[in-house]
Image 1 (cartoon, rainbow, N blue to C red):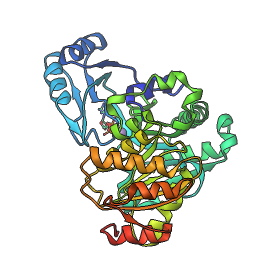
Image 2: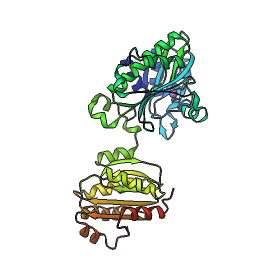
Image 3: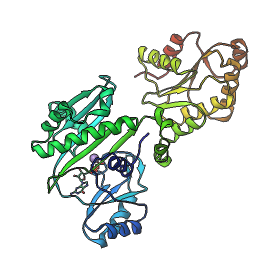
Image 4: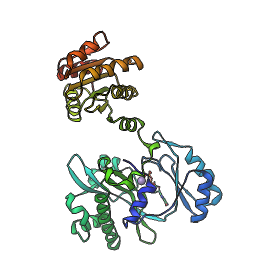
Length: 381
Ligand code: GDP
Ligand code: MN
């Protein structure tokens, strides 16, 4: 789950990480009101679940009160990376002497929790990593040490590589320990500060804040669930959650409908093996509700990239006849402009296949056969 910068900064301050305060405004007048209360100059910052707001015009320093409302109106009219701006953080402008990049994240590639640092902050870190990877510093930390990094020598050494000044390095070391504690306490998968700045008076301060929370741990944090901004989330993934489906959009073109998370992963692996790319992960679950199948179809078809649908059902608790009824209902209710390859075996398979006789489906006896057919139908990478 993503949260907004202003929410992440509140978590930072609660955790003892210095970050400027501010006021959230959703109208130009409210922004002007907030600026008057805070005192000028202020920075107006679009609150959307994406980075790169600065480049898109979503971060503006304003020095006179008369400019606040018009600038806020311009920011509220922006769409950044496809996301409409609905709120602005009005925050006191900070006098920046230098900017560094600092994050703590779960690196799936190396299977580590790792601090990432770069002495050149504020910029696009992905670009730096591609062009000059030597500038990116890494410090892996064992997960069970994260909550107690105070006084740790390796983080102190890391901070000294980011900040030449001894006092600034000391402040950054304390920030790293607090970040790590916050990371564990709130079950984060990422905490990113870009930029972490040194102010004109020598203080180290988080000027931006990005926090990703592990959805699977949200049940432990009702206070974090309350931060969810439904307007900013992938509408399909939310609809899926409500329907009891696990759905994750991917960037290939083979729409997948599978029962069971393990089988869904095996299906995606098999598609990859034969040279194709899945458009989504979708687990319709172990139950047999035909309505779930209809919802699943709708979500797959909303993706214009989908060129073919692969249905892979291994009926256990799930009954093939119920799946077949869901498919028939979907075909009658939705316009399905792409071919459907189906492998349907297990409980009540004979009944399921009989129901589907005459329907416009391409049957496959095995997962391999289904994957090969789907890849051939235009699902090739
Ligand atoms: P992002 O573009 O979405 O990552 O948004 P940031 O919060 O990182 O802001 C982008 C840039 O705006 C920062 O790197 C700073 O250079 C600048 N900026 C943000 N806040 C302030 C501020 O208070 N004062 C000044 N002078 N610049 C700021
Ligand atoms: Mn930033």
